[in-house]
Length: 483
Image (cartoon, rainbow, N blue to C red; front, side, top):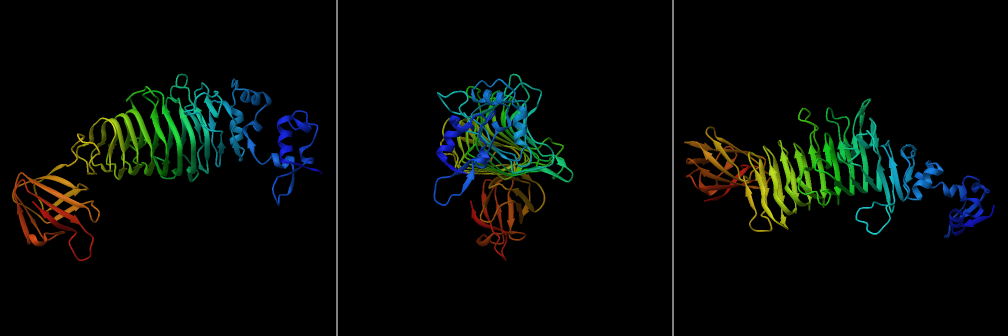
């Protein structure tokens, strides 16, 4: 068996040499032909062995379907071929061109990599890159998964093109964890370099278990994914139920250009109020939320962290509801935004180093929340409303302050305070503004007044500042200032 070189192999497979290009009537057996890769130390193989290294979607198509894709015609239905390839257990290469499907099923270990998406490309053919186009159908979920535990899914490098006119309720990628036997959910998944557009439902929808904890969507990495809402009723990103430990890097969850500030752009929260399982430990790095009435709604979640998020052309960047805690915004950027954060009842949040790049009315508005830690915005004239809550205390010697850094307290007559209950971390401070009636603060409980003596009576209009400490043998709240 005489080996051929890599150059000869390429010539054979592209120009039809020795009959390899004519798969229908081959005049040579590739398993009988040798192949030797260039480079020192390589070993001889057969051409057939070399050609089996990778699996292409085209390998699962009829000749008519292959011609339909490679010519750019894109007239046929490729649903069966796509699902057969995705269920094969191999990593599938998706070709340049437009693929048509009614739905796509993912299974455990599905891995598919395309030739890149078409977002932002100019002066190129329609089929430059890989596009999977949704055909008119009654399917609510375009890309979906079965019940049971699904692991190791990878989708990369293609465009999903929805049809919001003919499929008015369809979601793009809609993956819901459902128990089969004793377990279920989506684990250890990756979504990379995708463009999801044109879906009238939710562009990217991940739903973990919401009736029980046995079907989580967790340990996921979503990077360089662009989701565009075509209409006001659509949502770019939806996370519901037990979604946790998911990282989003360099993703954009926007409305299409010209849509304007309408609808809710994205949602993270409960499936419905009757099921209290909700997402937690979700991280965003450099995300974008543009063109919506509410950029993102957060319902009863814990530990949502956003690093350098960009909000533009939205009326309210974030609407936080129903005791959501641990929302952390680090160096957020607001451009043409009416309100940065609407902090709802019993919610807690932190905003560090906010940047205002365009017009903005309020950085934060809120009422009856549990505390907002806030840095001043970069631009003057931006206000806050309701950040420093007013509370009333008419009886008792304990004052509950939640996580507030500054509180106006309306004290009843004749009160003595010797214990403060709050969520502050060591090193954080608390300032109390006294109004309505004089109040006496006394050393004892968990307070220490230091040089102020065993007690101090403060008149209305005065303030006292404490620092939280966990040092052994000393009171948790140490007085550091009195005005």
